[in-house]
Image (cartoon, rainbow, N blue to C red; front, side, top):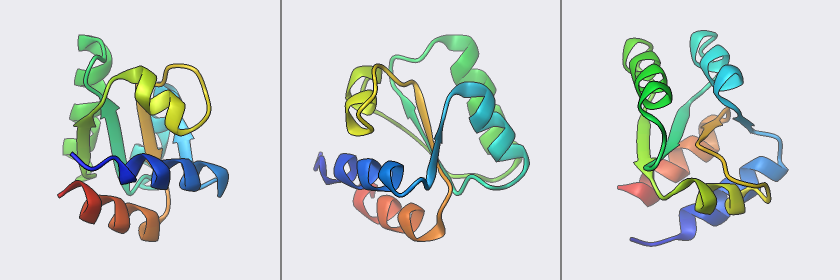
Length: 99
C-alpha cells in the first residue's frame, strides 16, 4: 500500500485539522465534526468497538490501517490508536489515496 497518506495525515495535523484521543474523537463524531476516522489495526477490542459503532451510527467513513506506532509517527507523537480528520478537503484526498 502506498504510504503517501501518512504524509497527508501529518500535514492535516500541522494545519490543526485533525483530533487525537478516544474521547475527543467520539465527541467529534457525535458533533459531526469528524469527516474521516483512521484507526490503528492493533487497537484494543473495547476502543475499536466504541469508535466503529459511533462511525457506523453517524455515517462517518472509517479506515483500519497501520499499527499505532506508525500513526503516531505520522503526527509526530508517540503511539496513537485513532485519528479523526476534521476537514472535508483532507478527508476527500485521504479517501482517494486509501482506495
